[in-house]
Length: 118
Image (cartoon, rainbow, N blue to C red):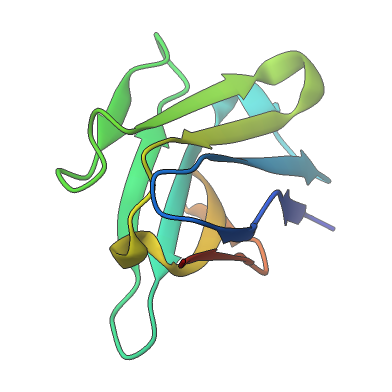
């Protein structure tokens, strides 16, 4: 059974930092084959892609709203993907979800709440 477990969310003041982690388990194929992504969904809004890191060459993609502030990374030896977030803004407030995708397989975590507020 595939599991993606996120952690690291919380309440932070504007300008602060958080590091999200997602630990994966139960994959049929090697974790390294999966493109790993972080999405977020704010209240009343659609889920949106925040950042993605591919399996090959670790190429990274970022939403324009977070580029330069967020960094995605992966540790294939630990089946883990991280999202380092700095210079957080109130508009970054959302539930952040970890996603793993390979071929027709698409898996989601249950999400972790990030709240940016003074």
